[in-house]
Amino acid sequence: MNQPVSIVTYTQSPDSLKQCVELCEGFKNLRPSDRVLIKPNLVAWDDQFPIAPFGVYTTTRLVEDLILLLKDFGCSRITIGEGSVQLKKDMGTLAAYEGLGYRTLEKKYGVTLVDFNQSKSREFVYHEDQSLHIAEEAVDCDFFINFPVLKTHGQTKVSLGLKNLKGCLKLKSKRHCHNPESGLEFSFSHIVDFVKPAFTLIDGIYALEKGALHFGNAFRKNILIGSTDILAADMTGARIVGYPAEEIEHFKYFANRHDKSLDLADYDIRGESIDNHIQPLKWDWNWTRDNTGPDIFEKLGITGVALPKYDDTLCSGCSPIPIMSNILALSAFKGKPLPKVEILNGKKMQARPGYDKTVLLGNCIIKANKGNENIREAIKVKGCPPSESDVAEAMKAAGLAVNIDAYYGYMKQQSEKYDGKEGFDREFFSA
Image (cartoon, rainbow, N blue to C red):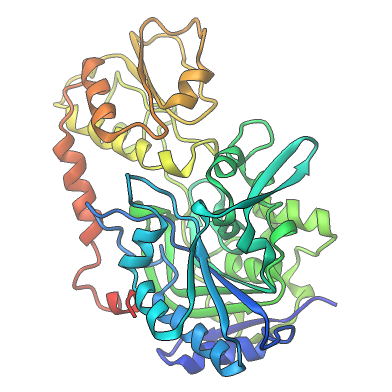
């Protein structure tokens, strides 16, 4: 029998979370003696341009409410684990814990904080000879609570419970998930088979459109979704942001392996009606018809330069690179055609003919285009990921008069875009 799913309106009270857990019988397999692991979504941290937290991070207030519920249940061995993307040196999981108030939770409640990036790992073969290295704490716990955010995503349409488990992987395996052979959604959909979350709780206080990191747009939703069935929780979250389960590739991979239904009518939805909460959110960014840049290029009449649309081989570490390249190209445009330069990223893009220079951003795309006869002159930017300054200098070397301050100005605006807006309370992200 399929497990129940609960939908509850968040009322800024711990009772909201308690009701969500009780309606779906979320703790029915929990024992007070269990080693509990909470896996929030703390994607990355940026000290220079702090990521606006709304819809990006699991709200710290809800994590604290969950700890209190577990304590009331009698649980004393509680660990919080995450493996955040390190966009810059020393700006990884520990910086996210510090910036989002988790050190306070550690002191107040005696919970243990773990950086999966530093953990020992275990190897699991998931397809033929392909394997995933997963942090030991995520595998060895007795009761795994998966705590994602309600968000759409530019590579996978939605980023919910199944995708949140990608943070349990070691860095090498995170990169492997973006391999062009088996593909991102096929690869990460297998993590759940080895981690086995006992309860999935989706934080929908805020929902994110066109995530992730700095670049999405958040909406106040005030909704919590819970289930001991990860697919049921994810399908419910996806439907609320406008996506039927059959449109999500990683749902289909998981459902086929486990003989699960993708029809929400087959699940026991408790609490509030899903129809009362549906708010379709966009997941994708529009590109020009000839795939030379975001659609604003066409609107402004930008020609010459080409920045093909990112694909699912672009790793999280390199995820800021496409938007940076786009902003820099915009900064170079003065109303006249730009030099014929193509700028590539990810792991599988192939340089096209007709460009005088080709900028290859990162080690993976350099390797992918080795021997490509369409390249007249290659400008290689090494790094995993390459630095912002190296990207800007490479574009200048290609003849584009870019201004890196335009990118920094954009990042500052993204960091501050919710300041003063009603309903966007940063207190949700402190303890």
